[in-house]
Image (cartoon, rainbow, N blue to C red; front, side, top):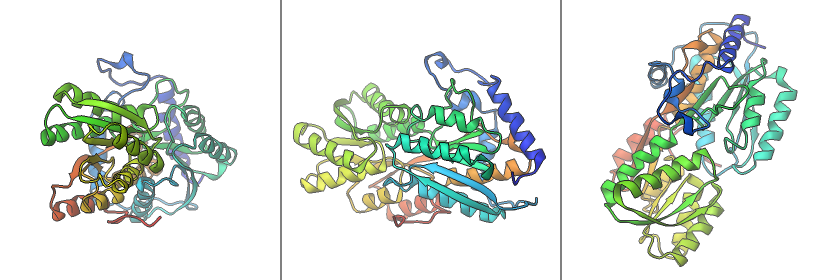
Length: 377
């Protein structure tokens, strides 16, 4: 390990406390209906806001010393269309640069549907555990990778951080040190309110859903339940596109041919939204359908500007990567106990009725580290 022994001891004790059943810190009414905790059940009061303030502020340089650069392994589906992963990486590394923390990274890339490949990568990291100080896992799907998360979190050689999920599973034998994400449930409700206010009641829609699991249950399921309950919307078809561009294209092609009454197509991620747009353009239907994306990635904002995509729940995307860098700094300084167990970034709605200046302002804030505009693939 490159970190100070006292730092390692503090973090180990914090992880052990979690494993010993000190969670949840409080219980919400529906806790018994879930096999996971939500952030409000596992975050101590004030810690999330304090971390968000740190992430949104100027970097305070690390004043400690290291024998060598910290070693960071990243196992994530960065081979997919979405630039979410690449932006997280850029934001983390640039914030580490600002903090003055030397680092080296090793990346293990996969696609969103390649669960077994991610497990294989995790086994490789486990075999070389002594090489790493931090392991960041962006699971292809939470339930499918639950054993992998627990195994990684059980190692004392490194700290384990999870990206893109914010619902710690109750049944894990070992909890990771921290979770970093945007709340898909909160984003779904924000999008629901916007869509109802703009489009009204009694609308007919279809959906390109992702992979069955927590993320899609929130992004798609919570959105569907909200618009149906609050505004009497009807869902005529739900296609599982596995978060792939091809799935969005195929699902939209089917919807346009078999369900012409659907005037809205809700897409659960960037890749499917881009495939959906392609299918609409191919059939000359892009002006007849109200299309949504998810995440406010550079590709989605370009599509909104081009009049191809109508709205998307937009994450202040660089918050997750920057927060990870700040978590590393806190760990190195022996302050891991100050961190929220689940960090959440902010979400707003970007849409085609915004002015160019408004979209530009959101984009500059969201991508303050990773850069404005679509990333080169």
